[in-house]
Image (tube, rainbow, N blue to C red; front, top):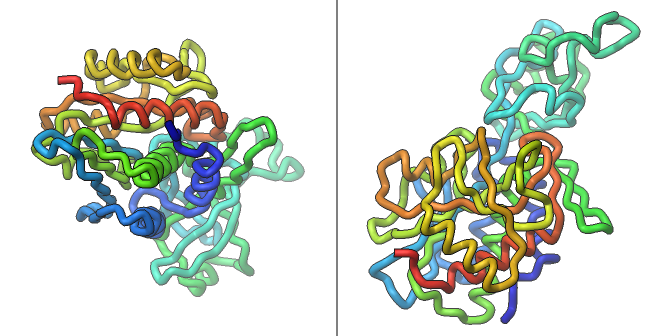
Length: 349
């Protein structure tokens, strides 16, 4: 059998994380994915929310599967232009201001102009602010320093920057000789790359899937509703491919595929979970079962919206999620292998 090529997946991942795509401003990255799939002659369509749905016809068209991963990321939006010419931010997605302190960023104006900057505490200089280290990292104290000659708010507006402009964070992607991938936005562009490479392998090997299978490249997951629509009535199984959360008390690591048992939305479908575990064990794929306490997926969004589906959640293990993320090539590989076997397996029900 020919598993998806991990090195190609990582190269694809590097391209994806380098395209700014905070929730609400994802057209560029969706276009990139659309072109990738078009070159594979895969049928795609956009939904009105701006997401992309790819479909591979199966032997059985009376029952469908849907797999989803999301390209939208954490980000920010300009809330206020200060008198000093610095920008106050409003966050997009669930993260804390301390996780972006010192980060390089870019501001995209409504006309499409791009300006760079740095996200800093107002009280950064220890030579001026005695209690710089004690000040709270929050909306009032953190600001964007723009890399342009700016002395006041009028100078900022003269550049075309206004309230409502999107702010994206520099991914700083690196792949180490030891196989680690370090980057912002591995949540969830690692899984998007895995799904795209899976589709490429299925097409290259001319594999006829047992059931018509849809791949939703979601663009609103970080704000809670990427996967709650566009599910065909024939869809039986719905699998979110997202990240496995790591930390104290967690089983997930950077080397295996994480299979979610339960998150903040409640337990995932028990039989579906056992099926995924069975596939992993049968094919000698490294996996961990885990519970993510403060987490929701596009699969849980689909359940909440009333769809009568069997739902599951898997993904590569990601360290320091929603901050300074890292995973290992073996986690990418194990996730891809499990998905390869899953899309060719029988239905749970």
